[in-house]
Length: 207
Image (cartoon, rainbow, N blue to C red):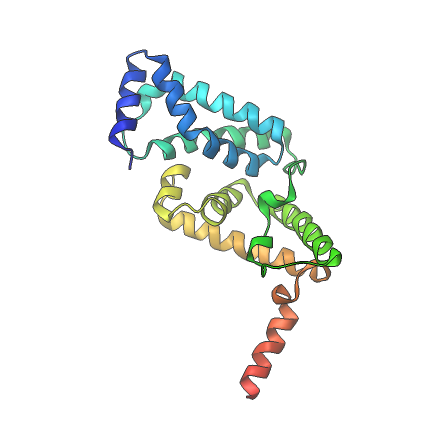
């Protein structure tokens, strides 16, 4: 929930104290920018959308009716990114670092060979491509829950939908991502290849 200190900043902002709103910007700008960047995949556009989102938030602050202030901000960001994607009618940009949306953190730590580092980079590109195949609603669910680590209730409030809708979109998105990734097995680490997992299950059943 919104902290008492944050509630005070909101109230002061409503009273016209710009410094208080600037403090709210400082608190939330990283989270807002991160979501915008993961949605549109372009650093410059994400910066513009973040700035526009906070301008909109300041102009419409009286429409905030309580609840999680961060989630209220994220609904503004959601609308801004959706509008951008509709206007451009294209896939998300890929001009950001590959590790923004990467499964490499799930791989085993330790020294990697040049081939393994190359494989990781290729995997990042494939993941970026697969994320671009998702609808905006599905992508937002993945960004908030699987990447940003939001709880289902936080994601639901941020997206302006029910928890059940978040889970449904997330399930569909994960299935599409899985199918998309499995279509490029040559770039997947052994642990993520469907054939290898099936072989492991077969061997386990034979024991």
